[in-house]
Image (tube, rainbow, N blue to C red; front, side, top):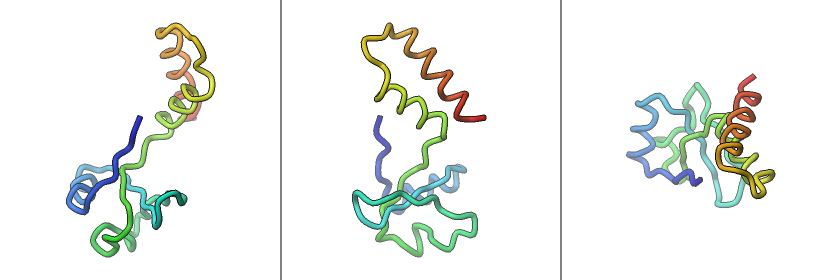
Amino acid sequence: MSNPILNRNESLKAIMEGHTLECQVKEGEKWHTMRESGDVNPISHPHLRWRIKKPDWVIAYESWIENEAYDVDPEDGFKAGYEAGLRAQK
């Protein structure tokens, strides 16, 4: 479940659509959420790597799939992942 790197135009479009962005200085380093102040953004820092931040429930679901979904019925797996996502939203 990839989260593609955006170019400058795609990043600006994502902001206009209301998405929260994350940036990364170097590949393999921690991703940082773009602040509300917007002092670090795709226009002022085009050299950074940008992507749309995944919602917490998506992160929880993907974590469950990667760590606990061993030989599980697809319907049961979906239900468990959905419930993990709901717990993450609380």
